[in-house]
Length: 242
Image (cartoon, rainbow, N blue to C red):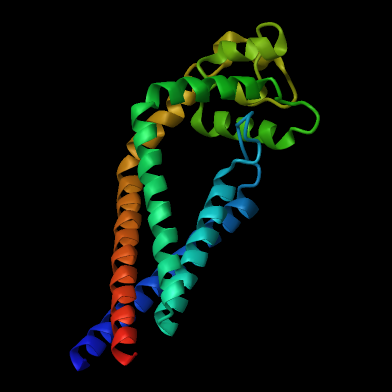
Protein backbone atom coordinates (compact mmCIF):
# COMPACT_ATOMS: atom_id res chain seq x y z
CA UNK A 1 0.00 0.00 0.00
CA UNK A 2 3.01 2.27 0.55
CA UNK A 3 3.83 2.05 -3.16
CA UNK A 4 0.23 2.88 -4.11
CA UNK A 5 0.20 5.85 -1.73
CA UNK A 6 3.48 7.03 -3.20
CA UNK A 7 2.03 6.84 -6.72
CA UNK A 8 -1.01 8.80 -5.57
CA UNK A 9 1.18 11.51 -4.05
CA UNK A 10 3.27 11.71 -7.25
CA UNK A 11 0.19 12.03 -9.47
CA UNK A 12 -1.33 14.51 -7.01
CA UNK A 13 1.70 16.81 -7.13
CA UNK A 14 1.94 16.61 -10.93
CA UNK A 15 -1.74 17.32 -11.40
CA UNK A 16 -1.70 20.23 -8.96
CA UNK A 17 1.33 21.82 -10.66
CA UNK A 18 -0.18 21.22 -14.11
CA UNK A 19 -3.49 22.83 -13.14
CA UNK A 20 -1.73 25.73 -11.45
CA UNK A 21 0.10 26.43 -14.73
CA UNK A 22 -3.20 25.94 -16.58
CA UNK A 23 -4.92 28.45 -14.25
CA UNK A 24 -2.10 30.98 -14.62
CA UNK A 25 -2.36 30.57 -18.40
CA UNK A 26 -6.06 31.39 -18.13
CA UNK A 27 -5.18 34.52 -16.15
CA UNK A 28 -2.80 35.51 -18.94
CA UNK A 29 -5.41 34.98 -21.68
CA UNK A 30 -7.99 36.93 -19.65
CA UNK A 31 -5.44 39.72 -19.17
CA UNK A 32 -4.84 39.90 -22.92
CA UNK A 33 -8.60 40.17 -23.46
CA UNK A 34 -8.91 43.01 -20.95
CA UNK A 35 -5.93 44.79 -22.54
CA UNK A 36 -7.50 44.47 -26.00
CA UNK A 37 -10.81 45.79 -24.69
CA UNK A 38 -9.10 48.83 -23.15
CA UNK A 39 -6.54 49.65 -25.85
CA UNK A 40 -8.27 48.35 -28.99
CA UNK A 41 -11.89 49.11 -28.16
CA UNK A 42 -12.48 50.65 -31.58
CA UNK A 43 -11.64 47.32 -33.25
CA UNK A 44 -14.76 45.67 -31.89
CA UNK A 45 -16.56 43.59 -34.50
CA UNK A 46 -17.28 43.42 -38.21
CA UNK A 47 -20.01 40.81 -37.86
CA UNK A 48 -23.64 41.54 -38.69
CA UNK A 49 -25.11 38.37 -37.14
CA UNK A 50 -22.88 38.38 -34.04
CA UNK A 51 -22.39 42.04 -33.04
CA UNK A 52 -20.96 41.08 -29.64
CA UNK A 53 -18.28 38.85 -31.19
CA UNK A 54 -14.87 40.48 -30.85
CA UNK A 55 -11.26 39.46 -30.30
CA UNK A 56 -11.29 40.95 -26.80
CA UNK A 57 -14.52 39.14 -25.87
CA UNK A 58 -13.23 35.81 -27.17
CA UNK A 59 -9.98 36.14 -25.20
CA UNK A 60 -11.81 37.07 -22.00
CA UNK A 61 -14.34 34.23 -22.35
CA UNK A 62 -11.58 31.70 -23.12
CA UNK A 63 -9.45 32.93 -20.21
CA UNK A 64 -12.37 32.72 -17.80
CA UNK A 65 -13.19 29.14 -18.86
CA UNK A 66 -9.54 28.08 -18.49
CA UNK A 67 -9.34 29.67 -15.04
CA UNK A 68 -12.50 27.90 -13.84
CA UNK A 69 -11.34 24.52 -15.19
CA UNK A 70 -7.84 25.01 -13.76
CA UNK A 71 -9.21 25.96 -10.35
CA UNK A 72 -11.47 22.91 -10.39
CA UNK A 73 -8.48 20.70 -11.16
CA UNK A 74 -6.32 22.28 -8.42
CA UNK A 75 -9.10 21.86 -5.88
CA UNK A 76 -9.67 18.25 -6.88
CA UNK A 77 -5.95 17.46 -6.65
CA UNK A 78 -5.51 19.18 -3.28
CA UNK A 79 -8.55 17.58 -1.63
CA UNK A 80 -8.35 14.21 -3.44
CA UNK A 81 -12.11 14.46 -3.85
CA UNK A 82 -13.37 11.90 -6.36
CA UNK A 83 -16.39 13.97 -7.39
CA UNK A 84 -14.25 17.01 -8.20
CA UNK A 85 -11.73 14.89 -10.10
CA UNK A 86 -14.48 13.23 -12.13
CA UNK A 87 -16.12 16.61 -12.84
CA UNK A 88 -12.78 18.02 -13.97
CA UNK A 89 -12.21 15.00 -16.22
CA UNK A 90 -15.67 15.28 -17.80
CA UNK A 91 -15.46 19.06 -18.34
CA UNK A 92 -11.99 18.89 -19.90
CA UNK A 93 -12.94 15.88 -22.05
CA UNK A 94 -16.07 17.66 -23.27
CA UNK A 95 -14.08 20.79 -24.19
CA UNK A 96 -11.50 18.66 -25.99
CA UNK A 97 -14.18 16.80 -28.00
CA UNK A 98 -15.92 20.08 -28.90
CA UNK A 99 -12.62 21.49 -30.15
CA UNK A 100 -11.93 18.39 -32.27
CA UNK A 101 -15.47 18.42 -33.72
CA UNK A 102 -15.22 22.17 -34.38
CA UNK A 103 -11.90 21.72 -36.17
CA UNK A 104 -13.25 18.87 -38.32
CA UNK A 105 -16.37 20.87 -39.23
CA UNK A 106 -14.24 23.90 -40.14
CA UNK A 107 -11.87 21.84 -42.33
CA UNK A 108 -14.66 20.00 -44.17
CA UNK A 109 -16.88 23.07 -44.60
CA UNK A 110 -14.20 25.70 -45.22
CA UNK A 111 -15.68 26.83 -48.56
CA UNK A 112 -19.15 27.20 -47.05
CA UNK A 113 -17.66 29.09 -44.12
CA UNK A 114 -15.90 31.48 -46.52
CA UNK A 115 -19.11 32.16 -48.42
CA UNK A 116 -21.12 32.68 -45.23
CA UNK A 117 -18.47 34.93 -43.69
CA UNK A 118 -18.28 37.12 -46.80
CA UNK A 119 -22.06 37.36 -47.03
CA UNK A 120 -22.28 38.21 -43.34
CA UNK A 121 -19.62 40.91 -43.62
CA UNK A 122 -21.31 42.45 -46.67
CA UNK A 123 -24.54 42.69 -44.70
CA UNK A 124 -22.56 44.45 -41.97
CA UNK A 125 -21.45 47.10 -44.48
CA UNK A 126 -25.07 48.29 -44.70
CA UNK A 127 -24.91 49.27 -41.02
CA UNK A 128 -21.79 51.37 -41.56
CA UNK A 129 -22.08 54.90 -40.22
CA UNK A 130 -25.66 54.35 -39.01
CA UNK A 131 -27.11 55.22 -35.63
CA UNK A 132 -26.19 52.78 -32.85
CA UNK A 133 -23.42 51.10 -34.88
CA UNK A 134 -20.41 53.22 -33.98
CA UNK A 135 -18.35 50.17 -32.91
CA UNK A 136 -18.90 48.41 -36.24
CA UNK A 137 -18.12 51.64 -38.13
CA UNK A 138 -14.88 52.15 -36.23
CA UNK A 139 -13.93 48.50 -36.74
CA UNK A 140 -14.31 48.76 -40.53
CA UNK A 141 -12.36 52.01 -40.64
CA UNK A 142 -9.60 50.44 -38.55
CA UNK A 143 -9.35 47.30 -40.73
CA UNK A 144 -9.36 49.19 -44.04
CA UNK A 145 -6.80 51.68 -42.77
CA UNK A 146 -4.46 49.10 -41.20
CA UNK A 147 -4.65 46.48 -43.97
CA UNK A 148 -4.85 49.02 -46.82
CA UNK A 149 -7.89 47.40 -48.35
CA UNK A 150 -11.42 48.34 -49.34
CA UNK A 151 -14.66 46.35 -49.10
CA UNK A 152 -15.17 42.66 -48.46
CA UNK A 153 -14.64 41.21 -51.96
CA UNK A 154 -13.75 44.52 -53.65
CA UNK A 155 -14.42 48.25 -53.34
CA UNK A 156 -17.72 47.95 -55.27
CA UNK A 157 -19.26 46.42 -52.12
CA UNK A 158 -19.57 49.97 -50.82
CA UNK A 159 -21.59 51.11 -53.85
CA UNK A 160 -24.68 49.33 -52.45
CA UNK A 161 -24.24 51.23 -49.20
CA UNK A 162 -23.80 54.68 -50.73
CA UNK A 163 -26.05 54.09 -53.78
CA UNK A 164 -23.37 55.16 -56.23
CA UNK A 165 -19.64 55.16 -56.77
CA UNK A 166 -18.47 56.40 -53.38
CA UNK A 167 -16.49 54.71 -50.60
CA UNK A 168 -15.64 55.59 -46.96
CA UNK A 169 -12.67 57.82 -46.26
CA UNK A 170 -10.79 54.86 -44.76
CA UNK A 171 -10.59 53.42 -48.32
CA UNK A 172 -8.55 56.41 -49.51
CA UNK A 173 -4.79 56.03 -49.98
CA UNK A 174 -4.32 59.42 -48.31
CA UNK A 175 -6.87 60.70 -45.78
CA UNK A 176 -7.93 64.28 -46.26
CA UNK A 177 -10.45 65.31 -43.56
CA UNK A 178 -10.83 68.76 -45.09
CA UNK A 179 -12.01 67.29 -48.39
CA UNK A 180 -14.20 64.40 -49.46
CA UNK A 181 -12.95 64.36 -53.08
CA UNK A 182 -10.91 61.18 -52.56
CA UNK A 183 -14.06 59.26 -51.65
CA UNK A 184 -15.38 59.69 -55.19
CA UNK A 185 -12.07 59.38 -57.06
CA UNK A 186 -11.42 55.78 -58.14
CA UNK A 187 -7.67 56.34 -58.54
CA UNK A 188 -7.23 57.21 -54.84
CA UNK A 189 -8.77 54.04 -53.36
CA UNK A 190 -7.17 50.89 -52.01
CA UNK A 191 -7.86 48.16 -54.57
CA UNK A 192 -7.29 44.95 -52.56
CA UNK A 193 -10.29 43.23 -50.88
CA UNK A 194 -10.22 43.15 -47.08
CA UNK A 195 -11.40 39.55 -46.73
CA UNK A 196 -8.56 38.13 -48.81
CA UNK A 197 -6.01 40.51 -47.29
CA UNK A 198 -6.90 39.51 -43.71
CA UNK A 199 -7.11 35.83 -44.71
CA UNK A 200 -3.63 36.07 -46.23
CA UNK A 201 -2.31 37.70 -43.07
CA UNK A 202 -3.78 34.88 -40.97
CA UNK A 203 -2.16 32.34 -43.30
CA UNK A 204 1.23 34.00 -42.86
CA UNK A 205 0.89 33.80 -39.09
CA UNK A 206 -0.67 30.32 -38.96
CA UNK A 207 2.54 28.71 -37.68
CA UNK A 208 2.42 30.67 -34.42
CA UNK A 209 -1.30 29.92 -34.07
CA UNK A 210 -0.64 26.24 -34.77
CA UNK A 211 2.03 26.04 -32.06
CA UNK A 212 -0.31 27.72 -29.58
CA UNK A 213 -3.17 25.34 -30.49
CA UNK A 214 -0.85 22.31 -30.21
CA UNK A 215 0.27 23.42 -26.73
CA UNK A 216 -3.37 23.75 -25.64
CA UNK A 217 -4.17 20.25 -26.95
CA UNK A 218 -1.15 18.73 -25.18
CA UNK A 219 -2.07 20.46 -21.92
CA UNK A 220 -5.66 19.25 -22.17
CA UNK A 221 -4.64 15.65 -22.90
CA UNK A 222 -2.24 15.69 -19.93
CA UNK A 223 -5.00 17.06 -17.73
CA UNK A 224 -7.39 14.32 -18.82
CA UNK A 225 -4.77 11.60 -18.21
CA UNK A 226 -3.65 12.95 -14.81
CA UNK A 227 -7.21 13.43 -13.56
CA UNK A 228 -8.22 9.88 -14.49
CA UNK A 229 -5.02 8.41 -12.98
CA UNK A 230 -5.58 10.28 -9.74
CA UNK A 231 -9.26 9.32 -9.68
CA UNK A 232 -8.31 5.64 -9.99
CA UNK A 233 -5.59 5.95 -7.32
CA UNK A 234 -7.98 7.68 -4.88
CA UNK A 235 -10.66 5.06 -5.52
CA UNK A 236 -8.15 2.28 -4.96
CA UNK A 237 -6.94 3.86 -1.69
CA UNK A 238 -10.51 4.30 -0.42
CA UNK A 239 -11.29 0.64 -1.13
CA UNK A 240 -8.14 -0.41 0.75
CA UNK A 241 -9.02 1.62 3.85
CA UNK A 242 -12.63 0.45 3.77
